[in-house]
Amino acid sequence: MRTRTIDPAGTDLPELIEDGVRLHGHLGPYLVAGIRVGLLALELLGSPGYFGLRVTSEAGTKPPLLCLSDGIQIGSGCTTGKGDLRRRILLVRALAQEAELLLLDGPTSNLDPAAKDDIVRCVLDVRDELSATTLIVSHEAGPPLDSADRLLTLDGGRIVADRAPRSALADISTRI
Image 1: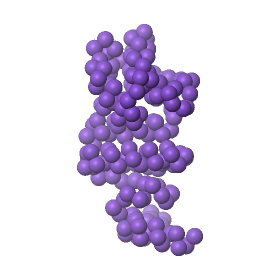
Image 2: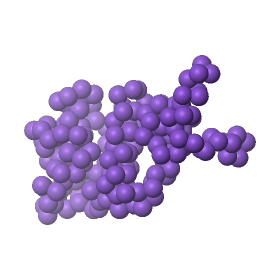
Image 3: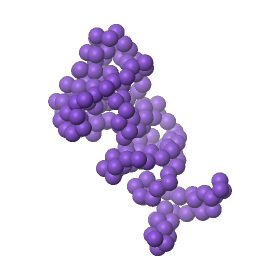
Image 4: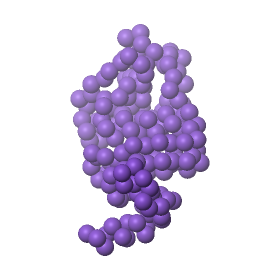
């Protein structure tokens, strides 16, 4: 997926649906309907999407209405502001721009466990697809660290440890 203006009349719907599946996680009729609703909104508003728009969705937070809401976001280029979805959109944009370096500051902070797992899976997918170097800044142990190659510990802005995450996590767990 790439950041782009959207011409509702000339949009490649299959490509937009593919972007929607990448963001949402699966294909379904509500996702496709949402994408079409988003495109219709752009047509009615005369907007190119992505920039200068805000959307409020009251479709719900559980499938199938969540699927509809995610589709609207893909079709219109807007985000409803849901934290984990906004983060996924940024990761998909990194993928679209073929980034060689991903810098993520607290990508899982303030998310529930399921959303954290989704974000970590998305980060790993983007990292693997791009073969990108990924730097994650985090104040929490858990999912982001489980998949790291190296863990740097800072104290007062200085590196005080550079080791494998499993050894660091084992050390942390023995202190608790």
